[in-house]
Image (cartoon, rainbow, N blue to C red):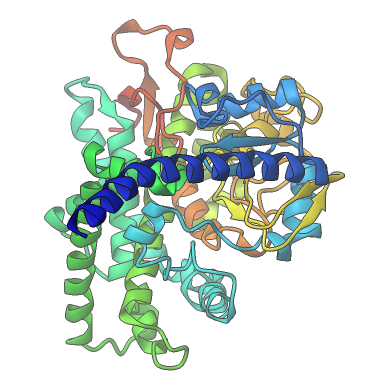
Length: 504
């Protein structure tokens, strides 16, 4: 009897790996067959040749939006990429972008819940990555009518003017020494200080540095390779690479920071509505729209991610383009100084008279959208776009960078020509699909006016107070204009310029 049991156990031991092998083989054959049927059943967008297991991953070297543009030139304005187990649609045409962002906007109004988004944004309980539902609609209404309304943005005018004045003072101290100014760091400090004061009511050198570094780390993590997103069963590799621990650490640091700020706000009262910051407003409406503490912290983080690094990146690119084109720099300075006259600084109400300055900012946003592929969307249901089938739960990226450099739409698309906007009604409000640096549709960035006010005032004052040169006799043609890696398309090499004071 014992021998029979032993023999039975040996047979089972032998059969288990054999059974497992055939089970895996059968599953693979089934998936291959299913994939073949799926491909035949649907008329999918064209796709570059892919390799087993990795799909098209091997074709994505370099900066993503540039690689996507190159693939689209070869395979068409809408292509399908297989990245591991994920399928991603890349759109590089304004007409197809209009179909997705306007005609079928409701079908593409959700976001993919990536590993980084879930870990950092409180399970996507923020605003930017929240599902398109009643909560999102209520929060968008609050953002449009309260947090980021024209009236509220105007109420922060004194903050922008004070922080820009401090920036000018710091730059002035560099003039006598003729030392280069790191424009990237200067712009990030300015943007972070303004956002801190508008969102949280105050700034501190240590606190600003802390939230600034956390925002940078979040940007890096959102742009990092995550195996769990590509191959759910291989998420353990993210542990080995250190990605998982970095996600946990930054999420913990962010939570601790905002928890302390919220507690400080709860303990004080703010009677003057005109002086209320974003957090005061969120706490005020918390009960009415059923906001949790996690919702509030997630929304605050959105403010910094969407309003700090992206705004600073735009300021840096404006100055880089002007440094490369001295004639445009001179023309802009002449306009700003003519409008301001004998006054000691630029005031916000004068900026509407600076048409060429606005052309410069538009042209910079055309060439250097802060989020080159926007924030990804997901198809809710099966639909067709441009004659192609889009299955449900497919991620869609709009290659804004490629659309805004489309030679079929723009003359000399890679050249910096601010004058192209003279006499043109094209604007970045989301209705001109050849020019959508802030997105479009239901999920358009709600902070356009907030960001534009900072960029316009900062650039106008930089041009009014100083002349600018590249350091060490650097030739303008040698300036590195390639983007770095991360969520926002900052310059790969931070811009350094030498200021020369124009007024004693």
